[in-house]
Structures are given as structure tokens and as C-alpha cells.
Length: 363
Image 1 (spheres, rainbow, N blue to C red):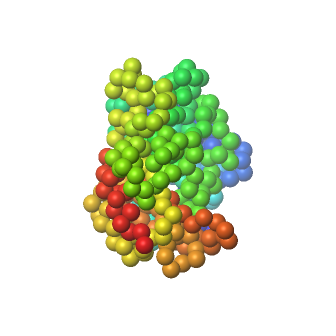
Image 2 (cartoon, rainbow, N blue to C red):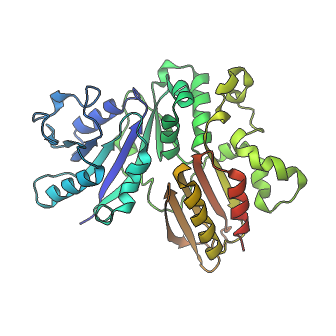
Image 3 (cartoon, rainbow, N blue to C red):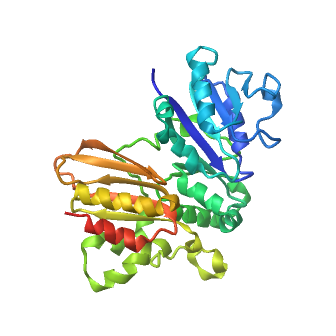
């Protein structure tokens, strides 16, 4: 039997998660979806689309979807749903887990890797984060949980964009891009988004694609042209700071009139490591192991497509917090430049230590 795809839906309070869920659950898309909710309050799915009374833990929807509240931990709930599905008591094709407004998606994602039974039944497809454009700046400034949700995302949906000026939207998108360059951003209207943009995004599978918007990297172009191997004096010091602050980026959101609100005060940041030299597998494994040991709780998402000594294939690795996995990808094509590229997204990670350490793992 194939694995059951699972989507984690997270996002700011008022960002439209419920609207999106309601559409997903009531639309006639022919898929049976099980929704697992962290809380079942007024904010959530209205009782009018539920069939049975709400004392049950698992509730059948009018269109055959089901909805389920977490009374115990997520693992137990997932096991219960899988068992009922095997016995033919429930029928569903996929799962959506809605986290509460300020939940950290990290432990939810980790559940899919830590427990063998869960890993053999479910496939984590992606983490979707909804951002409310109207209140985003304030929420990102005030709440670390909101910043963490952005850092975890495989896909970002921005709602309520029609309530802000184009300049404000642009500044928000720029800020989100600095926090998480690997998640595509899409402006959506009140949960009105095609299901093909919600499901089967494969944000979590180990594929040989590391999409980082090239424009984002223009902010610090010289840093990436020379990369780690350049000992030009002008490259030495600012190289370490470029990516966070984007000194070379003259985007208006960096202008100082916004006081402490311009983006580089965010504690969730990303940076990219690139090199055209191969990695020594043993050294890299030791270094990443040590880093994850120390900084794991602050490492939200990281991913890389690597050129490793001793293999003709790309090595793909990714992780969430302390959990890291790697896999052999496709062969390097003839004439393809063998290049390692890694992106790290985390809270106050020591960029200099990481870049220098990775540099020392090269052959």
C-alpha cells in the first residue's frame, strides 16, 4: 500500500487557515481528506459542515472527509487513523494537520521521521505557512513563533494582501525571502487557492532541486562569485555578514526610516554555502553531527545538494532540528558543473562558524 501523503498547515492567527481548510474540505475534488486539528474551538471548522456531534474524536464530514481532534499526542492519533483505515472503518486519501495559531511545526514534522510505524504509513509532503499581510510586520516583530513558522515553510501563502499597499507587500515578501529563501511565496485571496498548489508539493522529499531565487542572491553577489575559496581581502570580513544584512541590497525595506523594523533584526535567518570543491564525506558527517548536536533546537530547516568525493551521484541531505537524513540522488550529468549548495534556516545560527567549518570539510 502506498504511503498516505500528509500536509502540515500552519500560520498566523487570522491568516485564513480555516477558510482554506473549509474549502479543501467542502470542495468536490473527489479526494477524501482527514483533517487533524490541534484545537477545536470557535475559530475552527464550523459545525454546519460536520455530520455527527462534536463529542466524538473523529467526525465524518458531509462529503466523506473526516475531521479529528488531537486528544493525545499526534503519534497516537495518526496510529489510530491508520488502524481504522486498514480495518476499513475509515476511508481517506490524505491528511492535513492544522496546528494552532502559534504552534511550532518542528515537533509535528519530526513525528514523521522518529517513529517507524508512522514513517512506514505516512509521507510528509510539505509544511504550508499562511501569512496575514495586514498584520505580518507586527506579528513577525513581536512573536518568535510567527518567525519560526516562516522558517519551517516549504510553501508560503500570503493572504489579505489587498489590505496593504504594494510597497508594504513588497517589503514583506522581501523580508520573508531573507528568512526563508527556499519556500516559494504566493499571494492568495481568502483561501482561494488551487488544490494543486496545496497538495503533492513534495517539499519534504529528498530531491535534487534546491530552489533558491537567484534575485535573492544578488544581494551579496560578490560573496557568491568568489565563494569560500577566495582569499581576496575585501571578501574576508563582510563575507560573513552579507547574507543577513544584505548590505549590498538597496531594497526600500532596508531603509532606516523604518527604525528597528527593517528585516535584518529578525532572529530567523537563512544563509547559503556554495563550493565547487568536493566534500570529504567523513569530515562532513562529523561536522554536521556536531553542529546538529549543539544548535539542533535552533536549526529549523536545512537542505543541500552536495558534491561528495567518491560518488558519481549527487548527495541530497535535509533536516529539521536534530533530525537529518541523506540520500543518493541522480548522477551528475556530463558537462554539468559539480557544485555543492546548502541552505540553512535557523534562529541566530553562528553563520561564521558554520561557513568556516563547512569550508574545512572540503577535499
